[in-house]
Image (cartoon, rainbow, N blue to C red; front, top):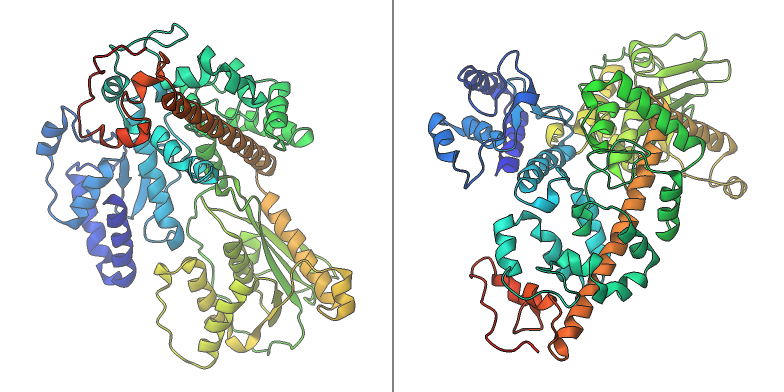
Length: 582
């Protein structure tokens, strides 16, 4: 409901801009009342309290204090349930998270950002109910989803059933465990599923069959990992991937052995040492980031989306040349792991006169090098999320600020297709009805359209280039030698732009992504181990009844234990059958 309300507010603000002042005044009115979901003047978002959840003894008295008088009040009321504050200028604030603006945030990232805030609060509430999750205030849902999806289709329902017990409180789990039943074959009293998976001598042969699982059994792993649930990583690069609270250093040998057993590459050497030094500098100079997860720290270091306050370029009278003289490109590190990706842009003006100075946008938003051979620009792209297409659009946008005619080449078909559509509509003076605020990367496309109109569509021309070409492509006429060199230069500038950040963020990004990949490889093996335990239990039920404690946890009468537990929430746990288990 909260996610839908935020999305609806965005649509209203974009489609009915005339309502923006009145909506802002309404939020200001609720702020003056001290309504939940607002931030009082001078207050800190760190002091925002999560509303009592359903079933909490204080919820009735809390609800009686506040009354919403319309959709904005209902939105703020919903925000309070997740510790979120919304300001009159539509800033979305939550403790530990990077703020973003509901009105100006890139549309395709609005829902992921809100979902992320909702998941964080639900993790905090669940951790207060589950003993095994008290050391894991935030989980990596995306990693959990990917690892379960990578399992065999027959194993996925079992893994989902077991890992979804995260939202059960201790009372429900106690009822499920049948605490009055018999001990395990190994002699352990009141055995649980983690006991059977990690500690029981009856399943030792299954653990010994996998060297990684055997090694994990010798380590002091947290309870959440014993249940197959991944936590967000600690920001210390030297800690184990699942170390959440203390973040103590572990030896390089331990990480190296884990990587070898998991058959996963891990970054060591100079890059690893640079990441360690970068983290120490962050801990020293950014004390406000203490206590946050690696994801949150890295998001703060990348910075918010913000508002691109670009100046409109001056009108250019010259016609765009037929040959390419400018090359643009974008880069994105680790595109499959968006929490650790860094975006950068690169522009190479190969025919620009060095005596021609930089415009305001170029000098403000990029690094520059002017030489007789070329004028090159590069810059990092901020924001909590990024994509390769977004970096390509940003590179093209900055190129449009140049105070001369441009015939640019790009290897991004997605960028060039939309650019040509906008360019043609303006050139032919045809109206279009695209609402950029509800379009992916609409914040950038709106500026692209504004720049084309300001400088004149006749002064711009885009060309498609083949990416990642070779000398053989030049020989075949697929691309000219000059275009290949220019595109390669723009590509290297974009990579340079992604690395041009304070605190050696590139090294920290590489090590975080490497640890995250290692964690995922380990979790897949843990889930595979769970599936082997489930198969062992199933075989035990098909044979003669044994004293193995799995009987008390699963079911006494059905070998299909997971079907039995589909109704465990609706029905009281059955009593053990009155018969000799032997």
